[in-house]
Image (cartoon, rainbow, N blue to C red; front, side, top):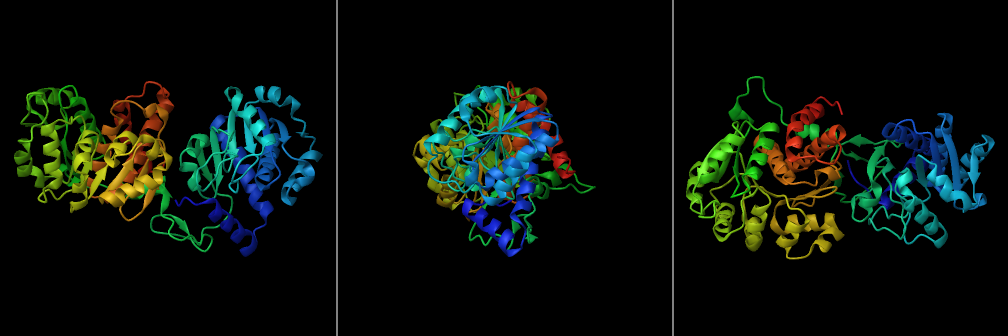
Length: 527
């Protein structure tokens, strides 16, 4: 689905209210009730709810949520940061309703700390997506208290955490740090930009009754409601991924399902090759061949009997020798996609091999360049621009900093722009890994991934991802779509494991084993 700016959301609201005649109060009712619904869905039957409201329309949504919590039997307490006489008309209407229901509404903040400590959920409904600039001192002090007592409760933000710019992702001092954000109609670009992404927590996108005029072929809601020029930033969703995943014919054989060649492994790092190969098999590839140093081939066979192991010439340090290039060239036309890099090391000989593989025009299949493959190519990055077939690079921030000869802080400052510029500069598909991984192509298309969790910050996860992406390509999916869908599947597999085992102690092997279940659930639309 398309991610939009705050200004675009304002135009959509105006179109719905003034153009279509949908009453604002109706949209607010849908928004507020969805906050209650999503809170119960995520956190169960919580009992003590504290709602913090300002004076704008976002606060009207919060007041409506408070009513629905109260009607569900929860204990509800409302704090107002502003004088009730300053409330917007529709917000004032909902304020008056709550006053008649004997729900406690407080403007004196002296007891806020103690009331926070006895709350299960705090609903943040002070500022909406229209916020820009800095929070005034009075409200900033309130937010400071809310954030500092966060260990006692979960924070749910209405549409966007208060104090965040929904377009740029800028965060003002003491902005709310939410555990979950319930955002309306469409995701906002700023929610996925650093540093705002750290404040949003889990993002739930809900329908509030604004119609989509039609659906495009990629299931992205577009139409007169948006009038958005050149907005190529999308959030990968399950409908998109479901269409990308290849389907097997009834009479398919292993050769029909993608032949993947993985050049990987070195002394102490053969596991990286195995993880990548297993992930490719679990993602549907029919045949996966690992090209690794000759002395490590027996270990590789023992670790993964399903994989085909090709012993390659090696250096005295048990890394793949550049002499392997001639052997690889003889067989490469048998494969549908190639991965270069997991655990391959970065010595002089390996560098020469990687450069030769990228440079040679006879190698006319998509290449997924990962880990040490990226590090090897960093010194010869202009070679990427000359490839005839697709090249997918999958760097984390440190690897991309090396490729661009910059620092991690610069990469993190604007991940979307940096990924887009990388793809344009090197004529490649870029998968910038991290929280809300960014996938871009040379045409300027951006996909932001919503799946995954901090438990996946462990060794081997990148190797698994490269295997998933290559497997989708090998089965015939478009390379960019394979990258976006692969990142989604990878993150969702990690989410499934975390739901079962928790986030501490997740391994790459755990994620690999969950991949088939995730793919099946997406195809069957069980999630």
